[in-house]
Image 1 (cartoon, rainbow, N blue to C red):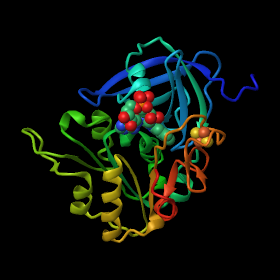
Image 2: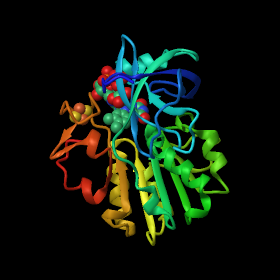
Image 3: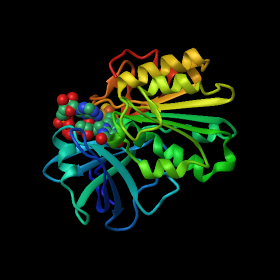
Image 4: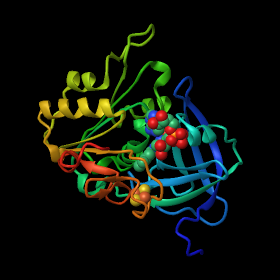
Length: 274
Ligand SMILES: Cc1cc2nc3c(=O)[nH]c(=O)nc-3n(C[C@H](O)[C@H](O)[C@H](O)COP(=O)(O)OP(=O)(O)OC[C@H]3O[C@@H](n4cnc5c(N)ncnc54)[C@H](O)[C@@H]3O)c2cc1C
Ligand code: FES
């Protein structure tokens, strides 16, 4: 074992799925250790993934900690490194180091109602919590999932979301009406307001574009959720992931260590640099 904390472990790409195509395409990857096993993680933690010669990015681990054989990541193509990920093929070897960051306090939420609210690629960071709660269904009360994309073609994990029905109430939405779409039309915060989930004994977990998170939190508070009942995860630019370079600093926090998971009660007191 090397003493170099920046040295990644080698992982082989075992599976690739095109989730969303077009301008902001999303691909899902599953990677397995080349030798031995990959590290364990908790819901909400991230890993630094590297493509040798192209760069390194912090990405949320999108698989449940209950799955030990592989780790799943869903990556939106936006720039240099994410484009390199989209060029990968099954069998390619990448670097992985982690796990980094804090986690959603899932154990504290046993016996509660869980309300998940995701938009765009923001379903990936909360997917481990959703799938862990569904796998341990008897430990939780009602599970409700809101998820929206711009159009039906932008809905990621579509098959997996449909499979949740029976274990969870699933409310999908698209921004604009389109032929053949018979679920909610409108933005995700409007769908939340329309269904008005009961705040009693509940925790709301949200992730998506910053503008969506802002209005989701505003609407949740209007419905009666308290700041400490609302959790989110933030995506500050990161370099080391280890609390050493200062790249992710917000107020008094290095988000890579103290975050990326925050309750709204904690986050609202940080400067709005995230
Ligand atoms: C804790 C954490 C978890 C993350 N989890 C994920 C994840 O699960 N999936 C994922 O795809 N990314 C995730 N990211 C973002 C990821 O680390 C990179 O920032 C992102 O992939 C862009 O890198 P790039 O080199 O391709 O783009 P760059 O070349 O750095 O940026 C190119 C352009 O894209 C813009 N841009 C950068 N990031 C985003 C973004 N997230 N959305 C929209 N525009 C952006 C930049 O402002 C710039 O204009 C996470 C980041 C953090 C800190
Ligand atoms: S990314 Fe280096 S301190 Fe957080």
